[in-house]
Length: 402
Image: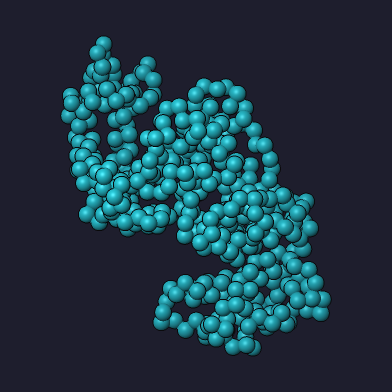
């Protein structure tokens, strides 16, 4: 408990990243490494050091002081309850003593120790300096541990884990410098708290601003930008930013290149989902859930956006079907499917509903002359169809006309 939900959540995410690096299978390791640049895998070493979640929990229990009773010199016999012993992790000397003297402890830990030793022989420092292929799990695991170190003892303070010892096997060492100022402050305040600075508790306990922080999918190949007014490069991100603008809710945008996700963002959201918002120590994902959250938290501002009914004949299910079909074509999920026919039918249904709506004389939107909430959900997708439609060769009569 760091005294603030955002710090607690970030710490939990970092711990979970370490756990996933160990438990992931070969495919999972490769999937996680896609966030890093220029990684060459040593396929022979990737499967080593895999530790299931259940085994991690078992070894974790063995690492607790409450699992063992103490004698005058180091560790004594196994304790049943560990009464009176602080619930802390055993020290390294205790680890060595248990490893050498307790069969139960050794049976659980020895396979992991042996695999680490094998990896150490296969992956020398010289090999990494020469740009040779890396053992994927080892590199991923070390990166997750360095993220944890950066959080608990951030630069430039670095009192316990000196900067020269933070060289990463993958990723640049200064990736953390790219993080938003607010996250840097959270790192530094947490480090002060860990060092016993009581004033840091107050800093962590108080949210300084009610501003909504939006993390959107940015253009591919462009570095992350903070404080930008751009709505991002995907319709779901644009929907969120559009809603915030129309409602007049204070917000700040950070764009993230989905093909080059910075390390700090993985600490904020372990699966790198976009868009998300951060507000008062809460993280909300999925554009529909985000909009629902904003309606609830900012009722007065959100009431400025007109609500409107979807026209008869155009159900929410049909709108969702159109979006799924369009993005399945964009991503090329099914080469054998006739997307042209499906999209022509879906857009024809949309046009017919727009023409038959009761307020068609008032303006081109579902809300008539003004954009309403239903427009915000569909227009970013229709904009992409107007650009991609010619490539798909959707008939001109079927493209959105209103």
